[in-house]
Image (cartoon, rainbow, N blue to C red):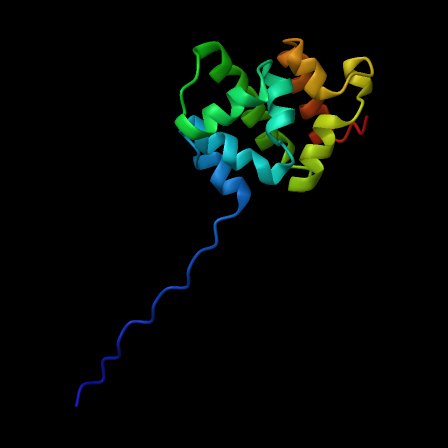
Length: 132
């Protein structure tokens, strides 16, 4: 009689929203992965300067212009920065809250105006403890 036993199956690893966002490569996957963070199509459209219909098209086909892809990646990167200090729900709230470091604008409005650097600085300041 053998003393060997069958190997135990390894437990399934759950993949959380942050992991999904980090691994998202295709544009459609990035759009879908942003949703659990409160970055819905309307917010994403405003932040990237396109229509909601365009966002739906990105999600469906992953077809995107280079400039818009850069803006989408900026939003993705900001979410990943904010996850160091906020819950997924809190990330979406941060994007829509007025921010003193952005002269009272909401980050989504600042992104719409092309002020990515200022929004990134505000996100980093928040993570470092500057609750504005």
